[in-house]
Image (cartoon, one colour):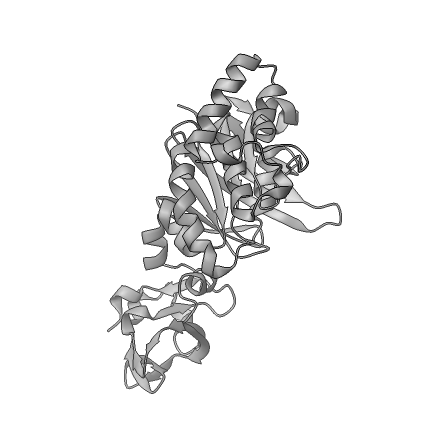
Length: 315
């Protein structure tokens, strides 16, 4: 089975900043690995490291017993789409779609057949003779995805392709293109990055949360949303939430928090460590009007912002 395995990947920029720290995941043909995080999370650095545009400091990217990091870019055989695509803007759509095949010395007759099929698949046959400079942003994105379909690579890399669209149009366009992206996984593993939780939810089975180059949490989108293990993850999934620092109160054997005038009792045995009793912690929660959604409450260490109490066991 065609599998991409990223192992202990680190990337340090020339000026010393760590862009990626100990990234690990595996994605096989038939799967989409979604890398989710805000801007500056390290998503593009990861994609460019796999593609060969950046050289990681250490780590491995294994495919079929080969470490792609040891191969020159031309031999990696990965297909990528970036938010800013490298088109030949004065050339036609058909020329741009055919180009990845031409540089691989495929016979012209075969190129014509493949390109015609893919233009039809993406419903862009009618703009095949237009120059890229004449296209709308949405049409350019369709052409970029069409160029993926002409390839048989080791993996597909799709880096936050909709980040430059406004919020109103973004979800509408994503719904039109998502099925095409999803179909690519049957050709080769897909690594898709986004800063949008709804987009990540569409592919949802394998998600890795990044924050400033650090892997925060991995799992299905359902599990991540139900059990955010850090304040960062909580805020990402629940942007309407409130987060604040409070002291755990102790009185007559009771342990509790005061949250928006609501007293929430705690079970000391469910803390990771008794050192938190009577100490200051970070709490995150959601208010529905004036009502506290008790099931939404999460308690985190104030310094590490890691989950320290099993919310399902709140008294």
